[in-house]
Length: 178
Image (cartoon, rainbow, N blue to C red; front, side, top):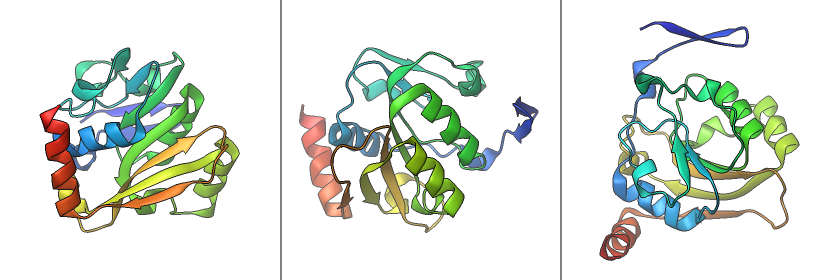
């Protein structure tokens, strides 16, 4: 696959970055974080997030010719399962576009370095974290995963949420009935 330049950094389209979120997980994340206003799914993939987001909404998908790094419009929320191979640069671009960013990621990506934590602190901070077992997210690894809500301005203390498979299943059924 051909590389992509963002600033002075070249990225290769890493096939390991394509991990599609199960629809029930995407619905649960959307329900928990309850985004309002203009929402962007910057890596639409199979549409698990995008197809369940309320309007107004927009999307990017590099495989369909809409590259997130070319997106410049401000949005109220960004929600997705981003590529992990260039997470820091992805986060920087997300912070430039929105006051609310929710990413489903291996949780260590957020706490992986002091530099990343300082970037998050400078942006605002972490408001909520939903921990989800990697196997429930469709991830082919055993690292703990989570949906992390990063906000430009923190007005409340942040919260941690942990859900087990049975609770996610019950809440999935509740979401499916609506």
